[in-house]
Length: 577
Image (tube, rainbow, N blue to C red; front, side, top):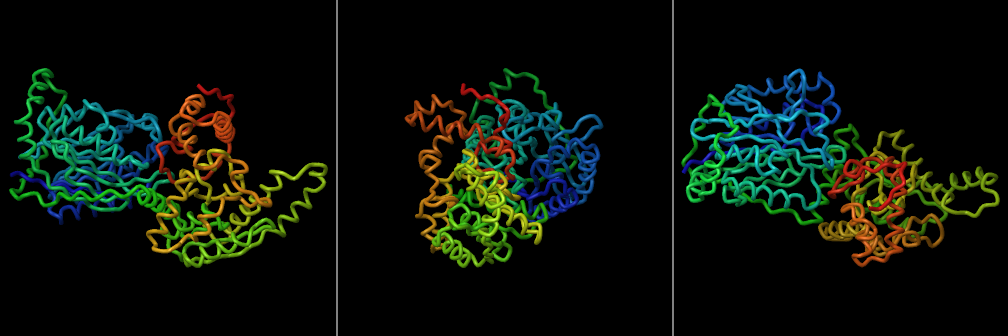
């Protein structure tokens, strides 16, 4: 039995912090050596952090990335390390992986397939690689690829396998959304089995603006079996013992590879000696742990917590402030913030007006006690009355309506932003995806803030997350009265959300079809939804794009988040094809 030990380092890097990232990478390589690993891989663009976006248009940034790899070389003595960085040849930038062996920079692999969909804009920044190198470690050969390279059948993986590679290491910065890990697993299992190769996948972890990276690094045997799965949403060095003899045995028993070799002829592969021999062990593989996946609510929760924690940490904020209305959305955001930052770093603010109910004020106070956070009470009624008086002449002869209602929300936003300016607290907004989609949020009011924690969480999922978190706490952390009362903005007497919106159990499925899946109104109606309701919802979504453009960033948890994922013109006459 020929067994090699591979370490997959799930790192939480910071975009632009090249010195800090180099230190993280060097320490990860040293941990891998202490664990007896022969090879170690760190994520895509680990040196620069991902995604560096328009920093890549600065020549000095690209040059600094390449120079930083030189500083990692001493850590690679006695081991092979695959390190993601920005390569630069004086004419173009490349998404690249440095292959380091025993203190030497042996080669550079450049990413061939550049994604340009969803949140990705790599064709804007990078030139594609052309080479398909293999690396000869004396006793076996392996290949290296980067993220998108593995999502396609064919080149480069197929050529690497047919040329004799027994292992391919794929380094990634693959953002999270609900259910994506299962899509990844199916795809990777297929690639491993189709190419009769051991396949290792290392992924970044951590939050970066809207994106969250979930780690969950994996290794597959050549029959497509998942043999190692690392933790989700957590830094870790995932160890995997790979049985190279099993690769050879699978190839002996499966004639497909021989047929492919006869038909292909010469392959576009070059083999590069590492100049460093890896001696496999004869031990039975020990590191073959498949950690269980988190449940749906827990997975989303961990993404929201990690995204919030890292956004504050990486932007230099230490404390957050939240307007607590006594409603479900602000309650959920407060709990996420406490899980992310600690109760000592979260401040709640109750801002009652003449329309605020006693039960809402009591619910906000009870939530603050349950969480152990500081609660400020700053009534907005004096400002509300003063503003109405100021506007009396201008509004004379008109009926009170939305403008007067939204005035209260804007006064609350003003209070929170003033506290932010005074004390350096980051304002966490509390609008959910259902509200963002339909415009049921006040621009410069409850949309005012620095980070929108649940902007990609539909209202029905808000309730599921709240009940899941209460179950984990073992008591009603979010008071049951908050979960049971009809949702309301409380901007006029007796107001509830369903005065303006369809019931959320109807609204959210329509939004999923229109926003996530790009179904036309006719297609949605054909699925059994009421035509009038569908047309009303679609119209609300279309006319509120201008609001969403002005919303703060927030954690992406769905395949089609507003912003980077879904980009529509504001000034447009939209037809529904």
